[in-house]
Amino acid sequence: MPDLTGKLAVVTGANSGLGYGLACALSAAGADVIIAVRDRGRGEVASRQIRDAVPAARPVVKNLDLASLKSVVALGEELAAEGRPIDILINNAGVMTPPRRETTADGFELQFGTNHLGHFALTGQLLPLLRAAPNARVVTVSSIAATQRGLTLDDVNAEKGYRPMRSYGIAKLAQLMFASELDRRSRAHGWTVMSNAAHPGLTKTNLLSGASYGRLTRLTWRLMPFMWLDVDEGIKPTLYAAVSPGACGGAYYGPRGLYETAGGGVTFAAVPALVGDQEANRALWQLSEDLTGTTYVD
Image (tube, rainbow, N blue to C red; front, side):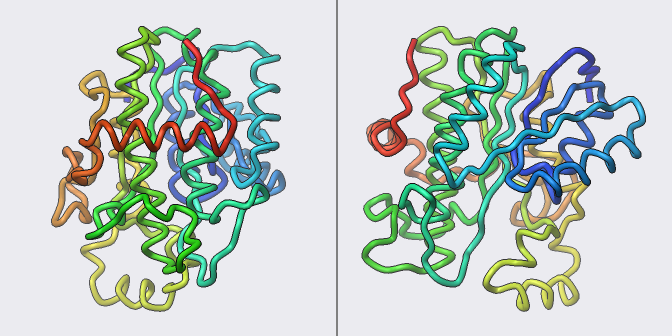
């Protein structure tokens, strides 16, 4: 980890799991960290735990419900009023495989609306503050679920039928395509914001244990522990993308181990073919702008 003293990082979903681990690591490196969470009480608990682990840390808790565009805009306006440039934005928070189709406050399928549209809108809201920082980075956390066969963006709101893991994969694929297209647009418009993506492999977090197949997950933790990472190992690809001098814009990072699940360092992750389809990326971007009312202006 390089010295991040004086840098400002925003981490969504930083009250537990990967987000908490990322907030701790960034704080330990000297960064000022904003914990952007839906449950302020849990955020305050996480903040105290970070201060206990890193006595010099002063994390700040901000309200953010990615399933509500109103909440996203409110946080954007709050941070804009404060005016401090943002050096690192980690789009980490997410919803995983609710057993039945649910919707956000704005009527979108919960996983697509929260994981992708919420972060798309948030990044757009914060773009002026990111551009105000020298060499800012946006890291979007995707998943190996994005590599499922046959995923398309024809029914992002699961209106023609809902399958929990398929909808999760669609949301994570959309996030990966967004990260790629954001970097392309940043270079084209001279925004000087690097965008890349990472995934944590299979990391033991509350997100997985609370998913619709939680019992199966807990069983595989016991039977195949070598495939599962502790949080300290699972955050490495995202940290690399966020702070390493060697990280590249538009790249996708994951664990180096077996099938991008086990530990052993960081490597380039397998990229679904659709991510390389520029027409599909542009179409998703336009759809995301239309659905969220967020426009990334030059």
